[in-house]
Length: 128
Image (cartoon, rainbow, N blue to C red):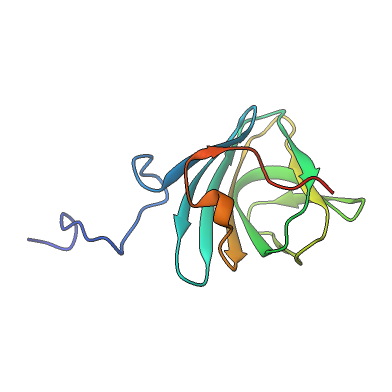
């Protein structure tokens, strides 16, 4: 079997919607979660003109804007982001996101993994 066709439980694809644990974060914002022992990845798709509410959680969160544009909100500051930009939100820091005319795809990395994201569900987590 070639490497291209072989399926193993430790290899994934960002564009394979059948992989990961699905979660609806808000209207127009969905994700697929990939939990590990120490780190959790979340592939977030944000439709144009969508807003992720301001929230916080104890886990550290890094985000990488893979595609599109967004405004990242953190500690009351708003920063315009473009594909290739990335950010860090320490645990307990209030943050959110919104898109304009363009949508966005974000790869979020959490450490440690968020317990509430280990099963399918909805919502971001704790409000500040």
